[in-house]
Image (cartoon, rainbow, N blue to C red; front, side):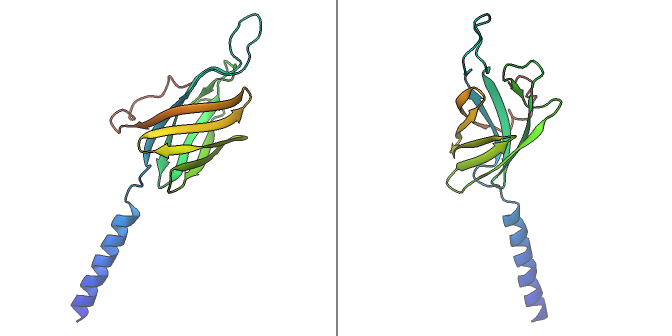
Length: 146
């Protein structure tokens, strides 16, 4: 009898350990891109905010990553650098995203392998579209992010 109880308890512990480490439906590396936005000045005719590419991780329905303002200015944001601060948030069971970076509130939706994020930035409303990066692609550098 004791060995049966011990076997049942061992199986229950093993099953709970497996379910705790199971990947969520949105787990992985995601990348989105937003077009340039805002009005530029009359001498350069460049937009106030450049287009950007951002990567973030989702693990157990939590968003994690870091972003930094580039010293080159013009609304440029990079994945790393001096003054990088965390981007944090959650992904609800239906794929709805609620995240924050500095004073920016980000909302959006993850669906399958597609992503759409929205926020109001210094250039006005922004929309970024993209998707999940297959595991073999996400292992490289993100130095091209802006």
